[in-house]
Length: 275
Image (cartoon, rainbow, N blue to C red; front, side):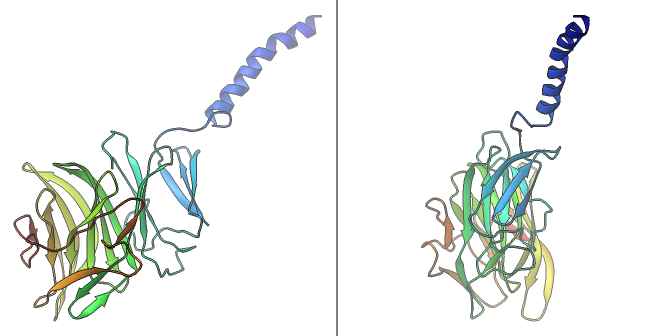
């Protein structure tokens, strides 16, 4: 009777201890929180906590991988819809591995903390510059998020698969995209910067000119007009590819993308400055 009482008395604490360990390991209760890291595997993307617990998995339905040219190690986190909770913004190469090339332009997907898609876009534009037509594929080099006077925005640096030209898209919380910068060269990295009461988008890269290539920085006022820095002595225009939406951006909702008008010129208008 004594041994039986000891066994019964210990049963509760032992079960409680096992349940506590299982809960902490995420075995009985699903992990929650904002993903700290993620990885591609075959057709899947998996998101994890800091401790390595899997939060969620998304199936793209075809082979995907991290774009080899993307300058950040692990995508970008930012509040793309203004709800105060950061989303993860992931560039996607539609190929099974980094070693494979793709005939498609890279996509960009904004995932909420619980794994549902906030928006998804893919650039499919054709751009004509210096007598040449550049129809893609376009590769993602960088992503950054910040705020304009109209609310949160996400900026994506795309470059043509050869090495130029470069395009920076601006995406609003609904996933509608427009062109903010066209560069007769390559955009390597983006940075959102607030200084002296202004909000600036800094784009670093290389400007291709007829006789040389030089590095530089474009400082674009996010509340000002869009800008273009074409090849010296040349003009450039855009047109949608035959497989794209009329705006040249394919996505999950009615994306609009504009290029042209009074905001564009060799001097980039009043809202930008080149260095």
